[in-house]
Length: 173
Image 1 (tube, rainbow, N blue to C red):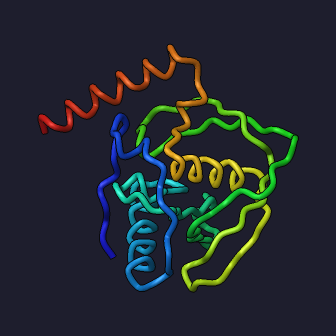
Image 2 (image 1 turned 45 degrees about the vertical axis):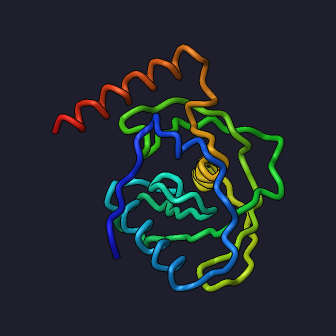
């Protein structure tokens, strides 16, 4: 497994719509393993392929935060939301591509998602709570959308400027 570099906003690759994965093979499984390792190392609860510069419809997530509990890593290939509840939830979201910036985002409280897993098997599951927020946030990445796109323009611009400054500082070393 290999730790991958996580792109920092603004980066044009984060705004591109990812392409469907034609077949689940060893390369895709290796990519998923790398993404899980990268996500856990960051640390985060979700990571989409575009965040590491790969424009394919693949995301990983694990919303188990309790260190005593058993991790529940999930690999979702070509995920699609097939149903959303009318009830909404507000969570304070963050993003590995927008480090140390958080904002409240309103999303459906429950969603049903269908996807292909790393074994090539078709799956369907209903998510709620943090899992629902996370899967919607990561699917947004696959569609070229960031959580800050839900914010008012002024707040979004402020966060973007902070990320530009962070990138300049990192480039200087």
